[in-house]
Image (cartoon, helix red, strand yellow):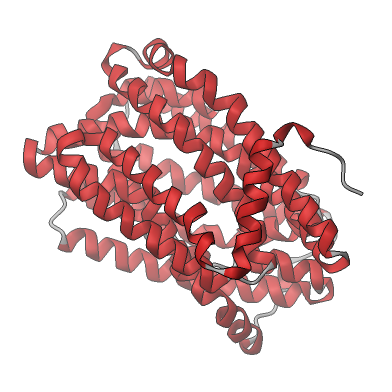
Length: 413
């Protein structure tokens, strides 16, 4: 559905306007850790361990995330203005960031994740995708201005928020029962602060490419060229993110079972981690091998000759999907081992390598250089860093074992 709608929207906007839209989204994306505050995995874990603290956990998390989102609106808009961005870009940055104020209701989704009942909130998400698709298609037919495509993001999050609250109430629960606790807030933030920095570094690693491509190439070749290159890069990125979302859904679905296994048996826990990594690697093989060879004709068929360069980029992104899948799977290991400071270090190392490598590669190799830089940084942060710490080497062994025995997936009791 997302792809089906993305094609006419991208064709309508063209590579330059699509690049402008994604440059603004990428700039806001650098600061999204201010809205999540690293609380998502911690809240799910705590709800599994202490379900009787539901109202306090959800209420405190919601308040903290809303405050963080409000702060982000101010920070990203002011920084965008201080950087001298054009007025349209600043307007879209404000719209994208303001929409995040409605993201706090995601705590309801985390509650259902802890109960392995994500199907309830998934229905809301599917409804949001369908409604958003209809709105975007209508906008294309009406030939509306670029800024309205940014505004749709706010509409999507408002709809999700209302839907989550409705599902929550249908189960006989009420957000009015939530309560925020200073003690709980201090406890959550004392555990989450490394994840805030981790999230910031991770979002930089994932989103800084769009910003750096736009900035570096605009200075060298002009703003129009920079926007077009961001547009080509973003087309390929959107397609690969649609595939990468599968691994995120899988990890969130398996997280409660892996956490439960950790409380029962170390052997069971490691076996479930191994199975998860096998699934992640198998998904990479099934999706990426065909995509690597067919990316260019697929892009031309869907988006037209104007976006042929995005096909070459998509082939490279198919390789990056391996690191995305294994990195997402590693979240369960980090959360259950409380290795938040370790994850912070790996994210900082990965982000630093990505930025430095981008700086040297983008001017010469343009968007292709940015993808290579990301692959290099993911290799270091997801795999190589495990070698330097005794408590993480066994996880690296499990990941490697999963890759060479991916066909041995089995049902774990």
